[in-house]
Length: 177
Image (cartoon, rainbow, N blue to C red):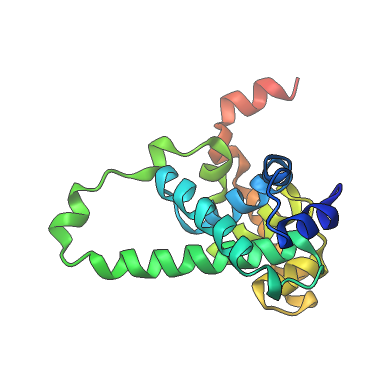
């Protein structure tokens, strides 16, 4: 990332004048990391803020390693904690029946990714959307490089097998002429 080390050094001395630039450079990876765990858009936005605050409050722990991997791991942990906290709040099935399905509001990207397991979806998003290297993804998801590669290839194969269901056979046929 452009100038990330310089920006972070400014943050260390409490100079946040370049925060907007930092945010623009990092918002996608944090968004997709959290969105993979939490589907509610408002909660995702709140957790993004929490991630940035936690990062700034814990700058002393950041060792100028891979910034994207570090932020992704932090965002993922925050999202998982929030997911677990909210899961405990749901006490009975009547409440669950009142909650509208999130499927209607999801973008096409997230709807097609619903064919994947949570772990597969996370790996695909990190690699395709965020362009992270598999070795960095392995660190974030705490799995071996071989496992990450295997899961990615399995996920891509699943998506290829299901593409007609997602696009619909008629629409897909029209696009191939």
